[in-house]
Image (cartoon, rainbow, N blue to C red; front, side, top):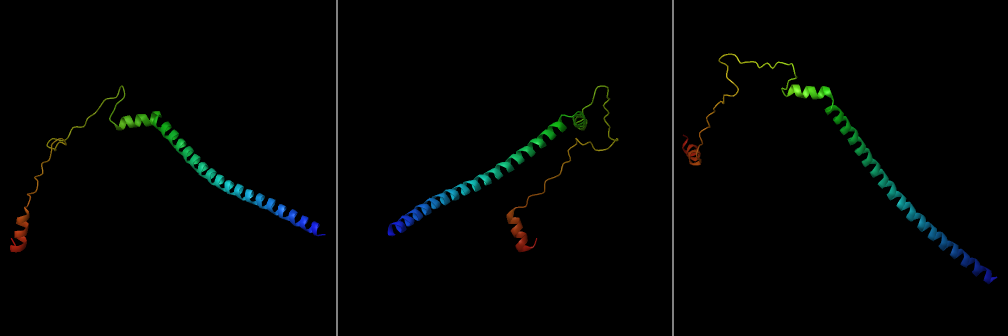
Length: 123
């Protein structure tokens, strides 16, 4: 009878060790699954950002190459089309021209000893 009890104990120990190995392997796999899930979320977020940037750039390209925007920018820069007449308004007589520089005299620089003299003697 003792041999059966020893045999059952040995089988129980072996089964316990096998279950322990399986649990450790299962734990490692769960850890790897969590790491891969986190990486997948990061990659998905980066891919979304890249896609949004792509869509934004395509929109900007479409706007920049459209005829209406190109013509508007040309008009804002003072360019004219064939058949247009350029009109330059002249200023009223006696009005200052924008090209005339306005001279401002630089303020006289006060020396430090003059500041101290004014501070102590009240000049």
